[in-house]
Length: 192
Picture 1: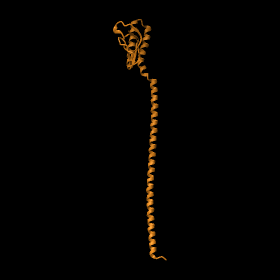
Picture 2 (picture 1 turned 120 degrees about the horizontal axis):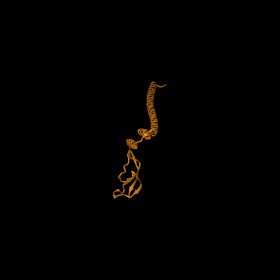
Picture 3 (picture 1 turned 60 degrees about the vertical axis):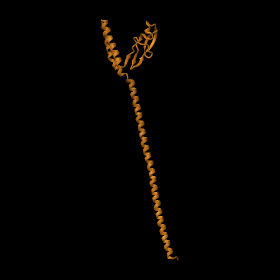
Picture 4 (picture 1 turned 90 degrees about the horizontal axis):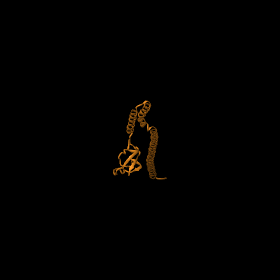
């Protein structure tokens, strides 16, 4: 048999070993728990990133849809503008057209040519004023220097004086500008 002293030492050693084992297990569990806390943090980060990605994707899809709607709306407005763009201009000329109709009816009955001529001149003046309200202006050619931006030379004639060389002698067809852009060049004869 063993002496009691050895037995007690063995028991004591076993108790110490058990305590150490228990402490080691606790530390391992705590370490594992701490490791598990780190893993969910990474998972949380991943979930947070995925949520943010989903939010940005949704935002992107909404922006694309909004832009597509804007594009369709603008195309529709352009089409309407092209179809109905001249409405304002045509409406401005309707009173002149009415005056022309009245003048034609009165010409059939009229005996005074001077009165008819005066009526037509008034309608012409009204027509010119309506054109001016729409931004159309007549290109002046009388005693003007020949300018290729405004005039189209259809003939060259000898100038009556040296001062008239390079100037417009005669205007065959009047030219017009629309908001300072030439829409028809004046057809002129230029002095040599």
